Length: 135
Image 1: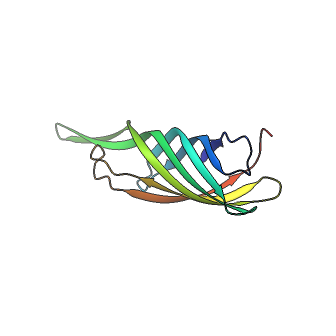
Image 2 (image 1 turned 45 degrees about the vertical axis):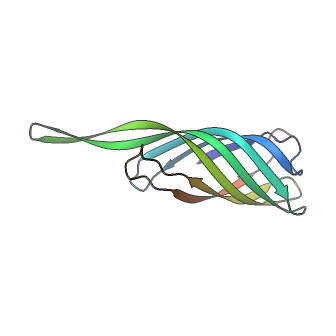
Image 3 (image 1 turned 180 degrees about the vertical axis):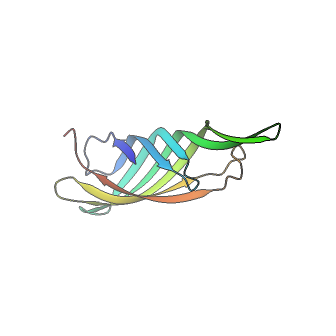
């Protein structure tokens, strides 16, 4: 589940705008991941219905990690959040309806780092629906 904000004053124009995003999801090990970030978006309108996005964000990510504690013949597990700052690159394609609603998809590239155990470059896709709230 995620929320995004595009601070573009006119939805149907190409160009740069400031954006913000907040996302919560569960990873393959059923552990929580929370991401909050901001950055810039360049949107190019191919025609009245289709546009493409390039988004560059800096994000703070809180990743729930399982730890194992071994104490005198007793093994226990506990969970804690670890915090990271990542650059994110999102590429998107959108379809714009006449009433300013938009549907589209984003592909997010999360670079690997040695700070996370066995972390590799990650590519994941999202489906998005946007609609005017404060028009």
